[in-house]
Image (cartoon, rainbow, N blue to C red):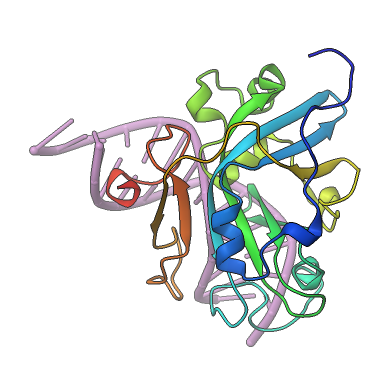
Length: 203
DNA sequence: CGGCTGATGATCT
DNA sequence: GATCATCAGCCGG
């Protein structure tokens, strides 16, 4: 691609499903774009997890704080947080203003800016670039400064429709939780090698 | 391939 | 002081 504008069609807030779990499923096959200083980074979303209102595992569950404030914004805003002393996680708020819920982007298939992602991650294998939420954030140069951005508007970080529709979508329990670990709120594109998790979760 | 473990720092109690 | 929506590296089968 040259210097022209990225080709993907931006998501409108009005077309986002209002139900968080439905939204997580719907996001499979959509595209996330970061207009980074080094160039445009884009990937096709292949794995998500829903953290709906009232879910004990949702960061909004215990109420609004400085860290999780973005989760309480209108659906479509991003929520970036730092965890395990090393990793950022990229989420999309999924509820009405003030309600508090979100969808974690767990893995993408790199589409554009792959050479930049390889520099950011220091790995060359395509399937190691953004398979897992921490890796995704690293490959996409996601950091604190991006927290709260409206991903339905023109800007540094936004969501778009894919050019390739989602394939068959699988569902499993969420990964890495101690609370509400039995809810089937993880979604992934079946057979896609960029999906994280163990073999038995990806049936 | 699956299972385990140490690293690492912000956040909240 | 505990917890944490993880990862890379290592080990055994």
